[in-house]
Length: 591
Image (cartoon, rainbow, N blue to C red; front, top):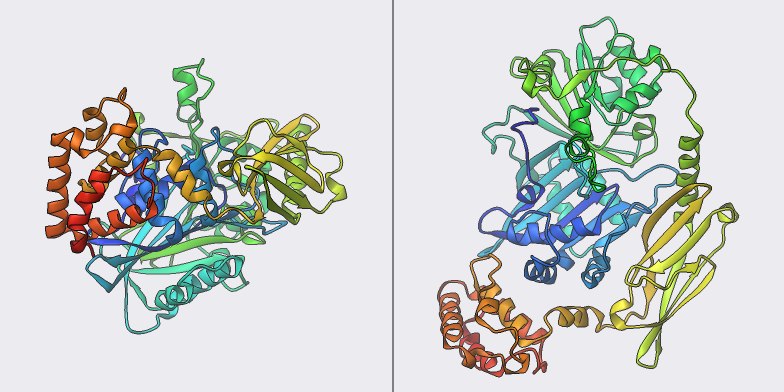
């Protein structure tokens, strides 16, 4: 169950709809967010592919997935924790409506949960739900995380144990509502989660613990006395570790797996009676050790949050987002799931054996040895970083809004905000994500002039500098009067000619994989205005056969093509006339 060499899972696979079903609605939560990773979510939900997509290689996947899914995905993240992407891609604009920033100041919005609702392609009343609880943020971080995935069907009666899950979703809706939210929460009450669906499952019951939305749900883990206890947590505070250890002291064993630097930050007496471990340096710094000259190497360390305890012949496994820290249980919004099983089937010692195998080649952890400087004060650099974090939280509290004004063939984007004295000693520059040369000193009134329609955005980069520290954050701000044609023209800029359009149609009629057949058949040196089916009888035959197959057994594909045709209506430079004629013959079968 906790064997890093075998028990690996793919984010995209976990989110992919069951066979024969399609996404109806997905809501997700994360502390930090990378836009590149979010681009992969619609692909995973639409085509059962990995979330690690390439903007260039997988552009057809991206376009179609975003076209299908943007209205059916809602993501809630901590305000100020959207990473600034490396590139300036127009497709990011299509993610704006998916994202809601939550400001839980002075604490954090920290849960990592996905709830997906799927409907059967042939019967809209056939509904399935999937719950995914993780310790991983929606980023490409390579640290070691943990997840729990369970499917369920909608029954006929309310299930009392689902109340915390409903309360959690209700809290999210209060931050930002979504279409169909009432039906969504009504069905959540009645979901019968199937723990036996996975044959490997040991567990007999499941319970949900949304922390920080009221005072009712964090007490079980904090107050239960366990005979044996194992904690996996990347971040620690003395008070919380002591609390767990005090309740378990004098019993059998307490194990703690964390990051070496976090263990070093604890006071020496905090770890008395605890067997503490951390990942070996070879694992954490693996990429750097292999190639010391690679400036882009990434560390991989513990990021999983797991609490496993035995009491009264029962073993409880809590997993989710909550670190073994004070803020996790006294201020943050978090989410944990508890899975319970008879201790005859799972003990803490079983998990310890998985994490500390006898085979030296599979030993990823080593015993923590306290430093002689264990109780020294935190250095000044860490204090400055904490000050920067506090100032960014103050920035995130500001009311900032924008307005688009037409300026001839271009647009001006006006950004207005209130002032806060606490930010006066911090240098802040602001610029739209879609531009690179329009940096402005942050003031209550800013004007970004002569933008193209595609450069209009709700995403703004805030480049913050305080003393020797620098941090860039991305904020989504409310912007009024964005042209209604912006998103359509962004897609037109990508599917900009007949060759690209035919490749797109070939993909929609294909078997679900990205096909470059048309690009291989067409000479890119030819003028795009001449591209069409009649120029190549092989292409025309291939397209005809696919439409014939769709009309016979997959008429929904023709309906999808009809939607795209409507989207590109009157675009003669993009849609070939002979394709219009071909589709007209088959359109009567679309449904």
